[in-house]
Length: 188
Image (cartoon, rainbow, N blue to C red; front, top):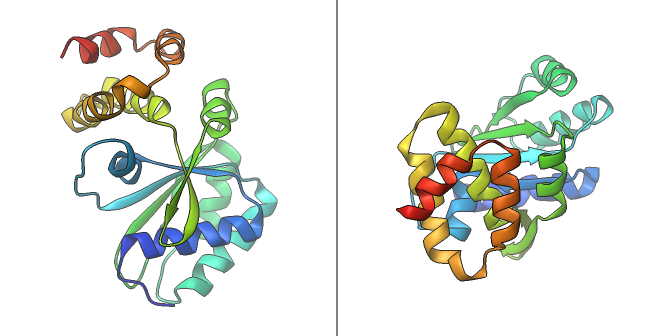
């Protein structure tokens, strides 16, 4: 199946997750498009709960989706065992989909539990909540010092500000040791 719109690719990947009964949450730039300011994004980032027994089915379904795509099954298996991210490159669009394997830690479990359904091209797609996206962006900012993450978090705070759960943000900013970054964001 060919798709040229990144939303079409996302919709098709979500259908695979639904068929395989995999819990996921779209994060990164695609989620910023939902909760913050529109910006260009060259990839799709997805947090996924996946076990070793799920890898073969996911790889097969992705390759059935696009025969010219690329995913390394051995790498995916290794990442699922040790943590981190593996990717699929769509052969039609060249879009890279990063699958971030949930570490089943307290924050990952919380953000997967709090995910929010939005409709994309007629398909229900789960996105990370705006609070969890702000927290993730601040974590990435602290690690990389990339201003893009801070700008994304700022846009989400400005656009969704009144609707955000401030107690949740404070609690997790402390737990994730990003309170300095969060305070900097609030004062901006």
